[in-house]
Length: 94
Image (tube, rainbow, N blue to C red; front, top):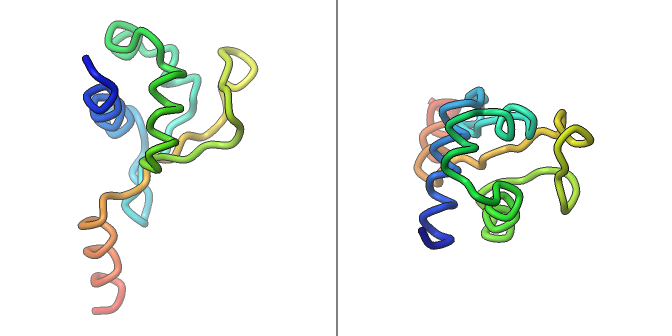
């Protein structure tokens, strides 16, 4: 699996495990992702995939390197897709 495929799978897993926010983004903690059995089976290097997704501006989180235990409560925010942002904005305006 290449990096783009892993980032896309990560986005799917964050949507599965995270909570949808009012702005269309999804929020999940690092501990939830790291300790999920399905994620453990999919991602050989979860931290590396998170960094790749952050670099591509698909998601945000505080810090550069996340470590199990120490950073379990760090919130990872999957940014909304541009279409979702437009829909959320138009819903507020209408």
